[in-house]
Amino acid sequence: MKIGRKALLVLGAVVIVAAVVVVGVLYSRQAGDRADLNNRLDRAQTLLLGLTGSKNNLEDQLTSAQSSLDESSAKFPESVESIEYGEYLFEIAADCNVNLDSLTFPKPVASTLGGVACSVVSLTLPVTGTLENIFKFIDTMRTDDRFASTNVKTINMNIGGSKATITLDIYGYKG
Image (cartoon, rainbow, N blue to C red):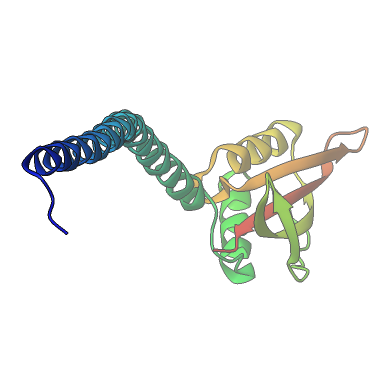
């Protein structure tokens, strides 16, 4: 069977048109994919800038929080050593001209203070001396750096003012 020249030209034209249509469809799809990828890339770059800013902000907050923790931890001793605090209390009592009648250190109790684990030693200090010296003793304990982690809870004084019982808690940081 012999195909004529016109039929070959028509067949050739159909093949060329089909090829152009296929290439056009492929190009159109790729152009759409490229536009989609460019949009996603732009969103990702915008998101990256925001996340980088957030990361820097969070790192600054972490540094600030770590500094605050370190500063707060420095105020609390890691453990409450009864010998040291006993010596400090007797030293302050002598400086304030009061007598510390007795001193017993109970075992520290686990507690939390503001969400931080710590140990607490509760002391009861019976002291005798003049009213002025007792107040001086209390004020010295409240302002002495060695007692920065101490909370004076109660002060009971007798009517005459020469005896007082001071209840306080000493906090130790459990790092």
